[in-house]
Length: 403
Image 1 (spheres, rainbow, N blue to C red):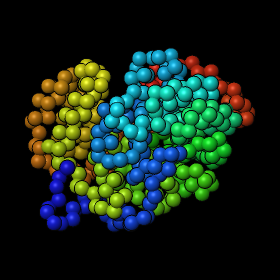
Image 2 (spheres, rainbow, N blue to C red):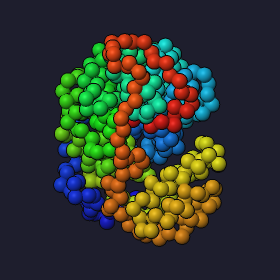
Image 3 (cartoon, rainbow, N blue to C red):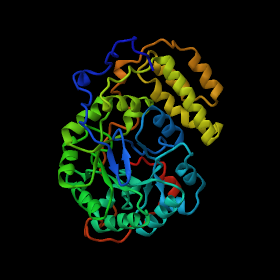
């Protein structure tokens, strides 16, 4: 990243919304407590499908400390030894604490998977109760599970019982839609069943990623439970994390789409929580260096062909907002080799400054809303604790965003 002039504080490069947000005062915030884990700064990388694999987690971890959660891993796929599932759950010795997000709607599978993960050295397990994808909710999974309070309790209880003291957390949405909010019940169940923390993506499943996140709901959840609450939604700049925690009183923040193509956001977060001004964002040359590093890691982890296929979406996120980036992205989205990526990037002006317009530019999914699909008769009895009959393939489910 760009160096500040010797002997002077770095100039704040931010949007107007963040211009007057003060950095953390000494002692203003405390480490996030997840069971025996003490997390400082209180920052968690959101589990995101196709994103938070080991290469990206490692890039983020090198920028700043925190907890970096794997993309969603289905219990059935993991227990069946599905090769892709096992790969996505894997780690390296340098990753500590090691954190995995689990997807299941069956308490038996939940308990068995957590036991195996703990045997494999996992330090923290998160349960996905927020996936809004139609193919998941229509079979009673993901964001639909908190509708069934007893079912949620049974799943969480099985996980905690098999975690052998390792922290178990849950991540939820506000609810199905504005007419069926479930986050209050979910908070109560999580607390009663021994969950170490609850994360709230402050949108409903119907909203998907549209509109503004309802930070007031995070504050309401915080005031109603004694376990730590993690806030998620609309943290695009490091200063947004401070604003969220000051406004809601939450115990930590979950960083999702704001870090796509911007792993250095975690370095900025570490700075402001430590009471320092963040370093200025990288120029295009420094972004290119990160892109090439990321591509190398993806190719090493997934193999050259699949690694470069993965890199195509990252190339669009990294270059968003730079001059003439639209035609560049068109070329980058069809690159098939590391050498081809390197050639395309070598033609760019490495001295170009990071565009201010890109600081709050939305990356990843956004824009639309949906009518949430639930199984026939699903709402007839919210006290029914029978696991739903899921009819989609476990490996396929891992292509869905964890919400």
